[in-house]
Length: 459
Ligand SMILES: [Zn+2]
Image (cartoon, rainbow, N blue to C red; front, side, top):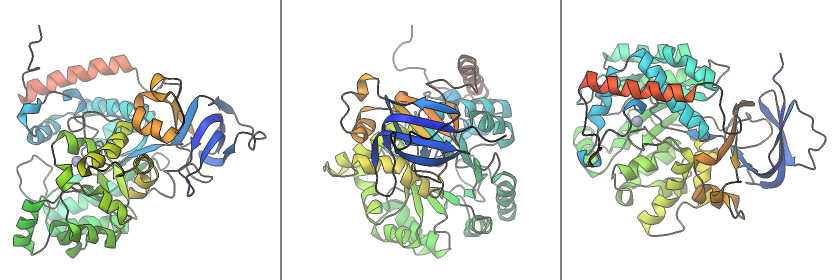
């Protein structure tokens, strides 16, 4: 049966993110067979007929948002248990993740996807945190979202409880995962090579994982930060800076996306730019974790070198929310404050990071990230009939500085309406919320990882 056609008509604005960055007032979009067939003024598309027409006179349409680093699987049931005064919860995070059962992971993933899609994310990259993708497949399928998955592997002993295998086996598992998952659900699922980090993987494993990405025409991601201490250690051990070490072993390149990327220096920026490597930055995690963006954040320099950058929400215990619009907002604010210069990362650039540039950084620039004929019909329709959207003169400023994901009215992925006027139909929300709370109780009891529930008495 042919995919039903869809028309978004009389949109207050269509923010196309096309090469000219046109913003079409009283715009219309025609979607056929899951792709954008036409976009322009409503008057110019008056002849276009479709199976369904969405009246968008109070809506602002943008491309679907992409989230380039999002651990979806474990954290929702224990979101918010870590008090600020305990410092980094990283060790507990991996212990909790290791303790999850299939059924628990499925429900946690479903809740994460619900939050992602309802706040405008159409594609997320989970850096290997899902242990039971077979169990979670139902959630990917039912929600209609796009997901980039992989198996997290390491082959060096370390303080975190990460999946560890002999080098050869870790490489084989990486290839087997990509072969099993890449391209499923009509291409909505993609699979990448996902060694955890250069500190937890040997050069042999990193090279083997990169080879898997090269041979399968897919990508490779790695947690990567530097900073003066790491630089000194790498200098001593490998005679190079961390990013230069990656280049020296052959694992930088156009199909590589490095996550976080804080603390890099000029030479490392040059290595990233020269090799066409992409990055994903997590501005809310950086701020909440006190990672020192004024000293260690180099987003403006990376942008100046035309590095492809995506934004990530990281995890429900790092950023605590999965709202990409709030993350875009943080990207726009963070460097103004860090550099004491209001001209840094303008609203337009921040929106590009969440859409066009972000899609490019995930290797999806040909298909996603802008509203142009031929691209996949992934669209977000924002509701302007809300106080925070008024008055409306400049839709980019309103979206980036006034709004958040709660004004997401309708979400379309592959031409299918997955959130329809604030409602979705893939999960019973209140049942799921109860279930995830229960899972959180069970997980804390099983692992003994608990904290006082509040610094203030709950009476
Ligand atoms: Zn991560």
